[in-house]
Length: 74
Image (cartoon, rainbow, N blue to C red; front, side, top):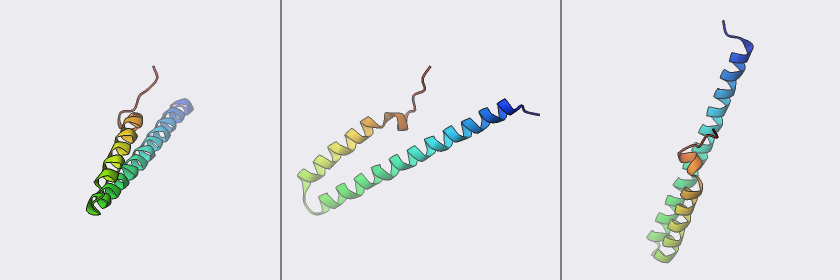
């Protein structure tokens, strides 16, 4: 039988993983929206705007490295 401490640790890990999954899902939704918007700009012939949005998407990706590859403090 597990002790209350082990149960708390297990629940804490579940909560951490659930939070990480939520962050990853939000990241995916935002990234997909970038692609939809960029495609619309390209379809409308606004290549300069599409390029600007691509740069914004790249900054978003660079800023979200903890979602892509989580970093744990030692």
